[in-house]
Amino acid sequence: MDERLPDSEYVPHENLICHVADRPGHDRRYAMNITKIAIGLGWKPKESLDSGLRKTVDWYLDHPAWVEDIFLRENYQTWMDKNYVNRSERI
Image 1 (cartoon, one colour):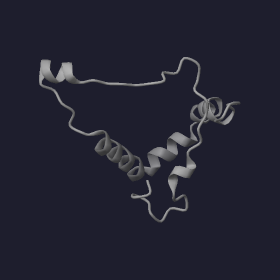
Image 2 (cartoon, rainbow, N blue to C red):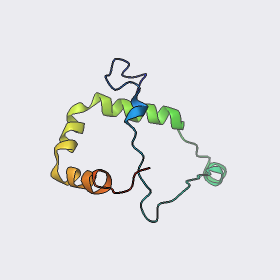
Image 3 (spheres, rainbow, N blue to C red):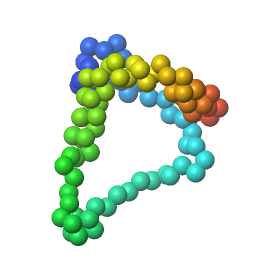
């Protein structure tokens, strides 16, 4: 975000991160191994994690009206309140 929006009032954007306690049953580790599908089907990803994340961030920044529409939906606000705003545990 700092690269894409260097003049943002929120630089450094990492300061916007608020860590919360894991929800019950949350996986502690995600590990993917694409060896089997790569060998069996000859498949490989078109994007690296870095390029995919950059494209995702760019899409959201390039579509502010879509993002604003989501923010204004009542069910989104309810979900955010339940899962983030009103969480009693923060780390």
